[in-house]
Image (cartoon, rainbow, N blue to C red; front, side):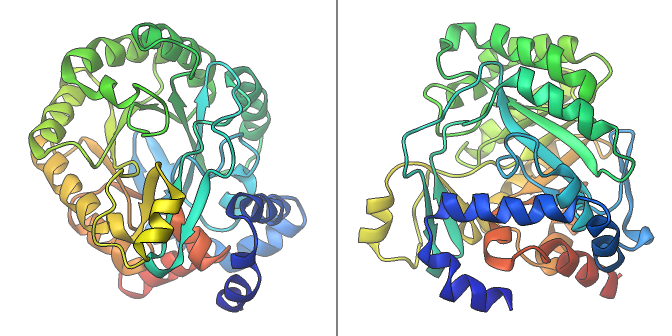
Length: 341
């Protein structure tokens, strides 16, 4: 039924408004006794469990950052069968994000362009919700993705990240430094190795025992990808997430006028599949076998997840596929993985 609902109703709504409507359904799925009923149909088979970062993931497939910015859907997403939920991106200071409209569908490409701009309620508000979420016995693994507050100068980025890390790391199962969103001015410049090293070192120290990962962009060249991967290992991080959204627009099926009208922002979804897979291979070749690599970008089917795992991903994340597949997406992935075990 979901494809029919999407074509006839959801595509007529503003994408951001439709996301908020979907969030209501997801939150309802996490409330008892509804959650117990939902889990009977969506829980991943036990043999899909993955041990990574010192944690037990019920499934290798989880939700990428950006979907649950304000820590409101963790229980519901877990009930729907996702093995982990990466909340955020959270910034130290609350911020409204970029002006609307800022989210655009490219239906012909099964893709999305967003320039949300880290809209979130800030680290202090996230901490309150994370404390509440951690008390749930049925929650999924919760990662927390942190970014730079927009009003903070790039030169002061380290202090800003450390502030978030000190507040949120004790409440996270793992922590992610996001230096790869295209929607915060100057952020991607922090991926330069000489800038990134002291930033990661400072956040690692602030995170304490919480596993720390860094998320990179697909638009880096191959050498830069491998340099950052080696840096992550040298800096004592636990893993790397590859990749974030892309600023590229090549090879799209959507007509050029529609793409141009959407404007700047990060492109996610099916068009990112090939480059995300390439970056995964580059990272895996540059890091030890035990180093955690989470693959994201262009993942929609169980075959996509299986291919990433076979290419060396420890875990796999999705985001845009939820828009096109609906609330039973994780169930579809997990059942597909189980059939071809």
